[in-house]
Image (spheres, rainbow, N blue to C red):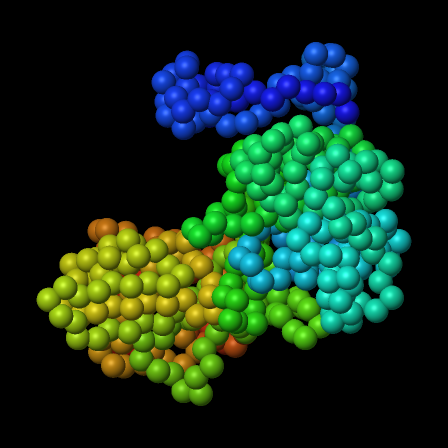
Length: 457
């Protein structure tokens, strides 16, 4: 590799300096210079060379588009998040809390791919080869032929990729890899950005699919520069409580599939196993209905899932608390105001706690109606009917707005044996459908209509 000169680039204005300075000489911003590598003097060795061959300008109509070929990983839930499987030359970034199961799942996926005839490579920078072998035996992957390389130097990793030409390679983790072209420590912003850029270019040039494992910050975001997410094709996040046996993988970005798709896994003694019916995880385990519980149907990507919303309303002090887990706290405060103004349910002197069961995070407003019904149920100490579900967005004027793909939500509820549904009027079926047999649907237009209806059930 050609020798390249180190320079320092400003993250604010993009100006460069031959040495590090506390203040950028161009825009006078403080502490914005980060280490980078200057372009090589030889044009043929330019590290910023295009990933694709130079082509002439053409129109979209003249470009022949073909379907992307995908390689299944052997894990249906992982394939669902990826959009059907791994794409040749694709770069995947997967992040999550320590110990949540990233390395475990990837080792299982590589073993399945290797057994199906794919050439694989597992590059470990945090463990020795013996530790990886020990984990594989603990997972029941006896006799696995997955190739393992314990290395953190980028140049050696790239040489190994070029020599072995694997179909899929895992880099665990990108924060441990460093390049000799930079003097900063592994894990620094410059090292992470530079190493990811080189690995991305190698993947596009060779056709090897590369999976980068990334650390996360205390806030739950991927550590390192934000540009790292823009370089790769797919960004996946592991979610869930490390004390729980269930894990969620969510696609935040996917150039080859749908975003916000999730895969559900259960952690067992033999590693992560896909959960084919995730609604069972998040549903109530009560033998009889209890106050403060309401089931809703949420959409995660293309998958409708039933989730139990629990609310607890208790006598508060002079400054009542509003706490939500898995739901937006600011939206909870807004819903309480709407509940008071339009439905006559006052909670201004009460502590209100709301929780989405199972560690799932619900960001869509279709949870509004279920949250408000759960709060009212807890406040009055009266349980909702058995087999009851609700969904719908509630506006500041008290109107109940439709949720997207309401028919699919109702079909999922009917399939799981629910008998009563309170839904927005626009989501109610226009005709009798056998898919809704056994499910009595009550359409409502306003929140006060929903409250009056629940009282009469």
